[in-house]
Length: 188
Image (cartoon, helix red, strand yellow):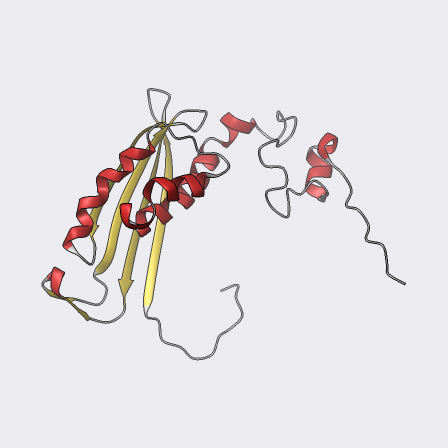
């Protein structure tokens, strides 16, 4: 474990998110997300027969978006296998509202506008975040080319510490985009 050792504790909850990207034979791409929440104890739930047993999914949800090389969504669907309330299953069709949307800056705001709050499912909407980054990873060579081919990471510049315009990574691989950090003046 890379984290420091913690004090003695008891595990109560596990959330597992898996995202996978596929190239389809029609030159589109499927990005699939799956989220499962489990508890380490039994607890009462009237909508699920009176009890959700430890290890049984509280949430078990799937989502798929079909995108092109520009990250535009051509199709979207969701499926809820397990949820805490029977009514949760009725929200899956909201995913169709993503058709025509492009994964780009402002993605989280856009998905919140379309599916956030009472018009959608918090968990499926949250799953769209890692699905978007999975889309970028799946199409990375399509979008950016290989590191040797790419003239510079235009879409990624200044999006994280390592891709800051002043970082040694940018200086090494895309020197034309490199700008040294401004030195702070010392107050006297």
